[in-house]
Image 1 (cartoon, rainbow, N blue to C red):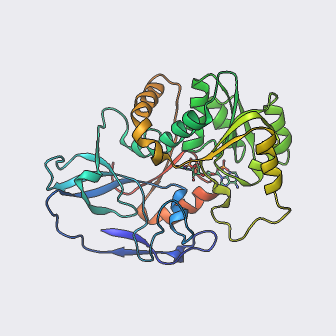
Image 2: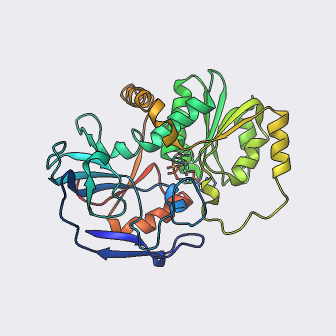
Length: 337
Ligand code: NDP
């Protein structure tokens, strides 16, 4: 197998020298194990957190570890009664072309039901993140205004479309006019705002004439500052991600924003709650699978994929994810699909 491992903890944006590519032999299969060939590797912002020793909700990678990641794989050989050669499975093989896995960590995918790549996208972890964070914590009501940034990505695009399915008004924030066009034309947002535009703050105000009832927090930074000024009484803020700061090496310059933020939490009776999607899996995953496949079939939810060919391009593509170069769910096609 060819693997990409962590060679050094990145400082700021990950560099090529933070990764090393090695080719090694895999161990022989034990009972209950399968040999896998990776078809798709999902690249997700959380991987930046794993490449750091800062304390977080999941353990850091050690130097020399294969970078983690959700994968869609083909079973090449099986010593498990549950899988046969040729099966397509969802697993967590990470940044490598082949792997050995315990069958109990895999889920079989049915290519007739949906394109298998969606198992790491709209019908997988990012889609579920949007679904659980928005519905369990954001609780949008018909007629309310929901705002989400990184809105052209897999989480944000699902947040906007689920909000609309629930009768709310969806306002998406994305980087650049092309992504804003996609928000309106592909995903059906009610309004799209470019966070890179010099008129961003005014554009946000114009797009939220009735204020904001749910802010689904994906990014942090300047976007959040502008949003805070538009929040309504009793607004909900599910805190999902803070991707604007994932490469930060020091605290942002400028005055301390914390007292102003807490003043808003108090005076507007805000509900601010962080979450990790996996916490909701036991209680909400079945509902998600039923609702999301129904919305996709019914045309209420659309999705886009940004597929990059070749494992060797994963570091470069991952940098692009942190700066917004991807349009839609970023996947590496590691092997033929
Ligand atoms: P995306 O594909 O949307 O990629 C991240 C996007 O963030 C970029 O494309 C870019 O879009 C945007 N971005 C980067 N920097 C900034 C900035 N400074 N200001 C505004 N936007 C910025 O990723 P996902 O949909 O996979 O993930 C979205 C968020 O959800 C992330 O924060 C991620 O960490 C979080 N997440 C959290 C989970 C949880 O369990 N809590 C699970 C899964 C994801 P643009 O070009 O529009 O600026």
